[in-house]
Image 1 (spheres, rainbow, N blue to C red):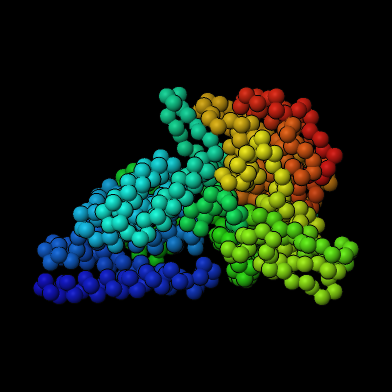
Image 2 (image 1 turned 60 degrees about the horizontal axis):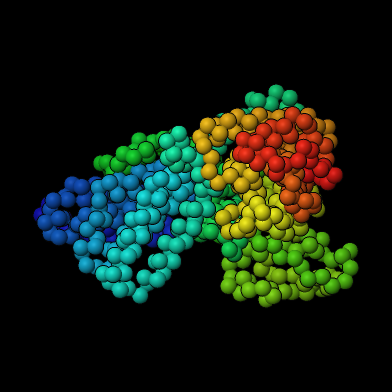
Amino acid sequence: MDDETIVEEYFRLKEKSNEKFLQIGNLPRSGYRKWQPYFDRAFAVFTELWRFQQQYRESLSEQQVLKRHHIGEIASKIGQLYYQYYLRTSNTAYLTETYCFYYAIRCRGYYDNAKTEKRPDFMVKKLRYLCRFILVCLVLENGKLAAELMQDLSRDIADYEATYQPFDAAWWFRVADEIRSMLRAAQPLSLLDSDGRQLFLKRRLSPETSPPLTDFLALRAPTGGTTQLPLRLADALIVGGCADQAKFSELSVDMLRMSLALEKQPPVAAGAGGGPAGLGDNPGSRQGAQSPDGGLSESQNPHKYLLYRPSLAEIVFSLNSTFNDLPDDGVVLVYFSADGRRCQQRGKKEDSYSGYRDGGLAVQRSRESDKPGKPETRRLPGSGGVIRDSRCFYPGDMYCFTRKPVFLIVDSDNSTAFKKFPNLFNEPLVCLMSPEQIPSSVCPDGRQSGSLFTLFLHCPLSGMARLCGANTVQLPAWERGLILMDGCLSEAGRLLLQHKEVDPAYQCFFRDDFLRALLLRFLFCCLALRLHRDFQPPRCYPTAHPALPDDLLDVDSVQAKVLDLAELFDARDLFCEAADYSRDL
């Protein structure tokens, strides 16, 4: 093959790969059969391109059509393909593949000459690569490398501004500030080893972070409801709608934490610890590019939809897609982290629409919706004068989706609008609701660095540390805390299963690893907040529907473990001896 033919074939493959890459970005997250063929074709053409440029790299370099940053661009797009595939499958093996490609780009310096090319578009590609790599490190909980990449990004943005005086320099500085805020918020505390070096936590689900089902020998068979099969969490809809919370790339702190809580700790792949793996003979050499799902282990994680400040139509579409594909033994988890919005009432409450009377959640992505006092309202005929904001999500909007098992989590200052959620179809239904108010002494920045309630569901020991005001924890104290936490969660689980007045829905969900962990962490959160002196009922307490018994956790052995944790964090004086259980959990 002569040089001219080689160059033509290279540009043909490059154009074809760009076309397939753009198609991937426009695909919906739902419907496996709809998007899977596009990924197959994209991986196939990128494999062909990668092999071709390797085989004829010398000739392409001599013709000045292939430089190192061009190789980095191809590898970066392959990494993006893997990341998009991870988002659609929730299989962390593909997330690890993304990391391997991005790390290899950094180690081999494919973008190091972007500045010397004197072309601003090359610098922009490098900046975008760094932002994506930071996001992957954030999701993989590699905080050390994320901090190093943040330094590289800040330096390159400054060079970009000084060299080209571009019109978008201010925007890039805002992006850098956004990432810094996200990185700070993602680490709720500093964990130090014996030498004073900072350690970064791994908080995905594992036997070390949640008691396994085998620990609960007194598990009762679930009764009631129409579902007979053992239930498993199949899909999760994670919605973030807090206007002032730290976020990066359509991912808020609360969304990140809940997403990690619904994933199991992945195995460490070759190169994931630092070696430049991922750029071998071809992009698909490690798992088969023709069929990306064929060579890697089947994902044990639920499929997730991540929606940041979505419209009501986007939420309903995602819910509808989820329920259409839900297996017979599947459960849907729906999580909301959003600012509350209460209805403007006129007339008597009994005249109001059920499911819309107590307000809802402001999740809409709209600048106008962020302005107080300007909701888009509609007065419903015959509704007793209720005024609704048509861009909010209300409990009533969820009713039609309760024909299948639903596990609902609402983290909002209007969470109790979901407290009287009816079970219209006699399927297992549980709703966990956050406190509507958190004392400023515990969270002075409000929800800016993430909700305390979601932090408890994500990593209960980190939530306890924040509750105690501990910003720095030594490794021996942390390890001791993990032992106490494990004992407390195990005891809370046994009490939940053995109590005769607990609704059967909790037992139905208890068999699933993810749902069991969330239930146990919720119980611990309830107990810790009730023992804290600054939390006063009812708005400062978490609640659940169906209501849990008042005396469920009124056991000295469980309370003693919480107080031992408080003493471990030097905050024993912030907690009382016994909690007030005069209200439902």
